[in-house]
Length: 349
Ligand code: ADE
Ligand code: ZN
Image (cartoon, rainbow, N blue to C red):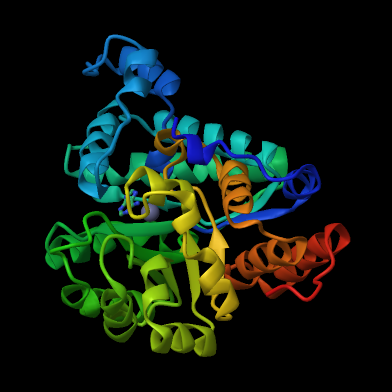
């Protein structure tokens, strides 16, 4: 564990973070696969993992960049085979999210990671939807599922994936774009994002994680998304920050991920404060919590400690997530009321 993800905020701020009703807008369900569950599923499905034990698997999580992480993340997905596996994965994440007071979540899943190994898309989507229904019943967590395309594969493959998902599109809220950013620009996906919009889906895309600020602007121009996942590199470009603030684009930042994948070498270098001060609707999320040493609450605590966040900042971050979600207006109002019962809007930043 890196020491900078271990710094603690002062006690009042830590207590406030515990009590905040949270909305998580950037979490990959495959990235919530904890080694304990991976080993259980490997045994059940007769799949071999390249680790002798849970401890050995966790100890191998040292990454030098995004690709070094993605190689491990895609390999671990081999244990996910049956509909029930996807349900268990989703349930385990929601149980953990509930402990952090997550009230609404819009998780990603990467169908191509599974269909390319011969898993029927029905097992993937139906299993995840089962798990999300369990989470709503057991914890009251509402959700909107995001089907994410892998940008290192051709746009035609993304298009075929959207076709294959057709029977479930009424239960999918948006499409997304993830995987390796550098070398895989957004423009080839413009037509498929336009098709998804025509089908009534919203859209989001990863940009400005390893790629620079210009990729955030190109993603907005070509894909016309309403949220940028990560986007933290936008802080190097004042004109772009003004554009983001004025157009109300939400950024889904993932602080522990950024330190683990060396986007920033320390949490103090996180650009979240700069973005908040520029009026950009930035939010805090966990990305791939099983790999990066913590869930959403840990991410809030790490940033609050490193950047000395105030209660006004925490209000802003939590409210940005509610307002930037694809929840109904009624659900957003409920969540804002709950938030305002915990922390006053204050002056914020
Ligand atoms: N897939 C899972 N985590 C990711 C990340 N941080 N960036 C891009 N693709 C991902
Ligand atoms: Zn991500």
